Length: 330
Image (cartoon, rainbow, N blue to C red; front, side, top):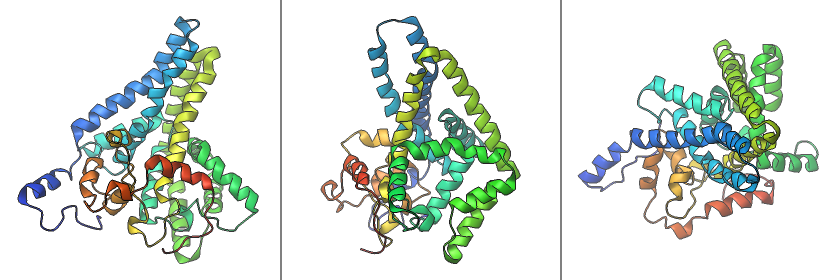
């Protein structure tokens, strides 16, 4: 449920009508962006390896062509994210099908990612959901290394491996989850139980195996096409995973428990909001999780001038300061 209204008091009838319209997904825009993400993925998996096979001496030029592919990663993830919230397409079945196919294209387990993301909304910045905070368990040097590994692509690698839990015995999968999601008090035990129930669900385990095998077939075919140039595909996957890992906790890094939405908004140059699918307005998303991405710019208060918000890219780099000593109120 939305925690505040999307329409401000005193708005006129025209503004109200526009705000109501923004509550529904912009299907035309989402389909266009799905086409962009699909073309970029097809070029990465099929087009580029065929060009590498057909040309000699143009390796540097072709490698440079990976840049626009990597730059579509925020769009690709943003579309999956809209699907998670049921805001990609109007049909529920089409919404989930397209989002699942997009996830398979990035080798991400859709059900696990959806569950984790919705848990993130439900328990934002609770003990299991603040990887940037030093929890004082285990050797400090190991915790610091773990943070930087996660930041530099480790989160994406963990997502690639997560479906393997669906291939091992349920008891073992449950033990792995309970070890990874520590129980802190009554709420912590509830969170641990919810994760445990998810990993044990037969239907979800079946879908996870199916989706993982689908991704395996897609990428096995791509590696076969690349042949000796397979490191190029690994590079493309890593760069995509690097962005996903950097962006994951970016809006929550160092955020106090009493900040609105337990998230922050950032400023970006004009036009880049489309590339990010408004990920820079993450506080608005947490305050209004049922609204589509196109509605978020209209929720930013006029008083919240762009100069009062930190630059998105500066916030991304700020994460390299390392683990935070604790979390509380401002």
